[in-house]
Image (cartoon, rainbow, N blue to C red; front, side, top):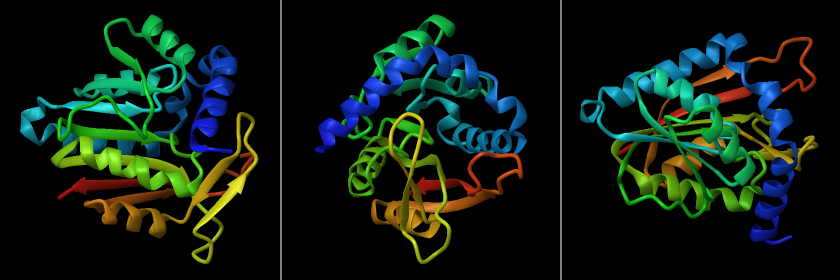
Length: 217
């Protein structure tokens, strides 16, 4: 399957479940205090640069509830998603914010124009060999000193760089945190910090979640 085929299949799958997805996850941050804390740290760092005037892109924004959360933290946030149905739901739910249909590998954003980028689980369906192109795009649109917060599921150990797993929508991939941090460094994004969240005993998937914060040099 080619890169375009993978993107199209994932887009179509999320189009099909968009309404159910919105209903199921719109309050998901409520029960995730550690993730809210990391989003708060990300927002504080972004606000501390350029007097908070720069924009922040929420890539893979889905129905827009995290974009709205960033807005509530004082950021000039807008959302980008490959799914037109997701974008339409985001626009209807948050009419005061901007949402666009787009691909993370080919962003319609000017070079160096963003102060921050959030990639919350948005690369999980991208085959690992195609993720460097997305990281390159993120590095391109970030201004010097801008920050990236990227969230992803972790592999079972350092001996595994990536692992695929079954996902209800499409095949998804887990990353070794050190490998992904190295990939960010290769594109001029230096790690600032990371948080590892252990799964609850009741969670269906028993693997760690990683929140990785990086800064463009």
